[in-house]
Structure formats: structure tokens, C-alpha cells
Image (tube, rainbow, N blue to C red; front, side, top):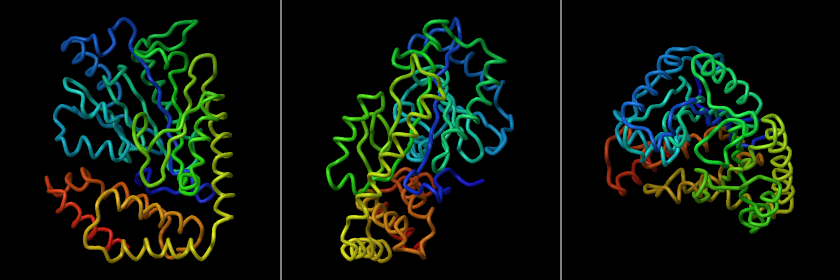
Length: 336
């Protein structure tokens, strides 16, 4: 099965991925910050017994992993692949994850809430991701008593997640809006209607490769489907702004920058992570605009994810930054 970043939506190539996240907690059990070790271990076992080995259509078999036994390189490689949050990777003590074969489903156990169910799909597929999430939530609700209040909705550790407990997000490739400085204005505008624009790895992160996450902030007083529909509508407007801005570019100057980026990637012997992401963004732009017709559409994102620092160390062992830069350049030369 292909990973999410290997799937490109031909109709919406600027939408890199769609993510649905549901926050859920077990009734009568303290939130993770207040749980003792015995409570944590009991909670992990109960969820493992429910989900480990279950097969879900389109994503494959779910597998439980004890995160305390996972090496640091793999933990942070999971962050780079958007499987877990940076905070979860750093968190000490008992914790677990349930993950699907293609990594489209990842369920963080004992992060901020007992259950953080995430489904991620390549392209504009929020509704498809939501349907997968609901199937898994149904299994959980049959085996566990989920904390719910008739007025407040699903009860969560952070009050901002009360209500549906749903966070939907779309990762968008917006190099021209970024370059023109328009994104700050867009971010201010969407914040007034309950949405937020963040960096590639979510809250508190910077943008990398001109990739931005657009997500809902309001979870109380709005249905899950309404939140998804609203997010999709605003994302389409932002994408149209990016496409319009691209139409006004100097075509020769654009081609020159795209081919310069491709040439550097094809021949460089040293590539830092930061330089690689900037160049990959230019190549991705060239692919999206039909300038680079011989580059597979999924290749830029695959290279961006798979040549991150911890992803390289996961398969090659701990390395110095210089050795990583050499290996990164070598892999990209070969793949291109």
C-alpha cells in the first residue's frame, strides 16, 4: 500500500494532504496528565485489545506499537512523516500508537487525550478520511465508554477541543502567495471565521517548502460535516488565489528558477535539509504547472519526507549533519 505522500490528487495538486483528527477520552478515567502508571498501562491494554489486528478497508490491518520501545530516530521519523505530533515524540512514560499498514491511520494513545485518532490521505479527501475515522471510532465506542456531555459534547483535556473533538486540516502548497507576503493577510482573514493557518508540522511550527496547514479552530456548536465543508470551501478560495497569482508570473523567469532548482538537486553533492526543501518546493511548482513533465507528480513530496534527518538515520544509523547532507544529495540524485 502506498503512503499518503505518494498519492497526488490530479484534480487538486496544490492540496498535498487531508487530515481528520478526533480527540476522545474514556469516561471515569483521569486525563493523561493526571493518570498514574497503572491507569496508563490499563488504558493502553484496553485499546490494544480492541484494535490490534483489526482490518479496515482501504488502509489495511491495524497494529499496536509500544512507543516506549521505539528508538529515538524512529520516533522523530514518525513526526517527519506526520504520523505523530512532536509533543508525543518527546513525551516520557507509557504511551502507545495504533497504526495502519500504509500509515494513513495513526492513533496516538495517551498524548494530550486518551485517544487521538488521525486519518491522513493524499490530496483533497477530507470526506474519505472522515469516513475511515468514523469506522474506527465506532469500534472504539462499542468497546469503551467515551466521555460525553449532552451540552459540551465530547469531553477533552483542552477546552478548545470540546464539542465534536474534530480537527480537520488540509496541507496546501502555496509558494507564490508565500513569496508575495499575502499569507499573513489570508491568515488574519480566516482566523475571523474560525480557521487557522500553521506551518508544516502544525501548531508552533514554521513553514517548510511553502507548505501550510489550514485547519478548523471551532469544535463546539458546529457539526463535524459542517466543519469539513467550511474548511473545504475556504481552502478552495485560497487555492484559487494561488493559481491566479501563478498566472501573473513571468513565465521565462519561472522556468529558469524551476530548472535551476532541478539542476541543483540532480548534481549537488551536499544538501542541507533546509536547502533541499526550498529546492523541492520549486520543483513541485514546476510539476504542478506542467513545466517539468518528466517528473512523477508524487516524487517531490516523497523526496521531501524521506530525506529528512531522522528518516535518513532510521535506516542508516546515527549520522553527523555533514554525512546526512552527503547521503541526502546522493539519494536525490539517484531518484531524479
